[in-house]
Image 1: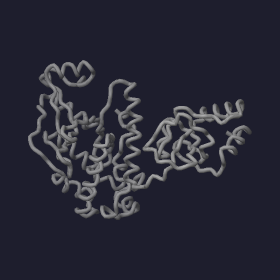
Image 2: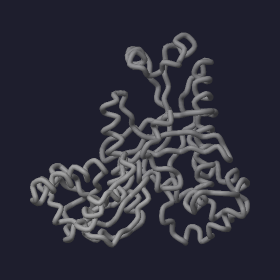
Image 3: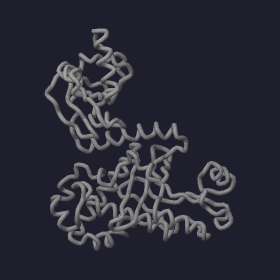
Image 4: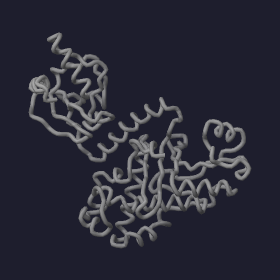
Length: 343
């Protein structure tokens, strides 16, 4: 289950650069009231994580449809799969834990629905931990999951407020509405959402599409990472300064040193993707040499450089385990140190 959560927006990341009009309380206040949290964003997202857990438990228990606040025709609801479609999907690996007889040859799924232009888009919701056990237990006991009524965020406001009573009720509602708006905006953009919380309520859920083919999963992870970073960067509201970045791992940098030493020419990097956001270059390599274009350019989000020359780049520093350390060396000084055996 946890493999799904790679590059999904967490609850804390949904609260990136939250406006002071929503909450002006400092990180120390949140820690004093509700205990340790890794970051300010994680702290102020606590009411939202608790609320989304309540929503999913309530939807499964009472068979209701949850209307997403301020969104046009967006809601969390059940999908009924039966007949030949159920048999076919079960053969492909879905509904493998559902009992044939008890469920009356019917499978149920929880989805995130929203209107996209002239059609309705469906994003699956994968459940884990107690939510999965509760949902499967109901299906295998013969419960028919269909919507009995609609519920809104107002149905959970009192319960969330009683859990976070040190915050005024109006501020609790602002925090919840802000979280759901950000979540809906990210899902429409194509991002995945990962919710894991056990402190106040047991909730493990993932909203996003997933392919069963491993090759497609690898491609999806890369796309999901880029979309996540772009969305976070948009929430930060930092203007693009025109610089693009690339990162060379130890093997790539060593290959360049050896080629350059032999040929004494400017080495070109073929099929290297420069990135607008420096963090986008951190994928699977723990140690990177980070470079930046010397000249500014505004060529879209990212582009392929067929003949990227190192003389067009300036060396910024090293990144180990995503922790970037700046350097005032030039790439020529860097290669001299490399040749001395310091790298």
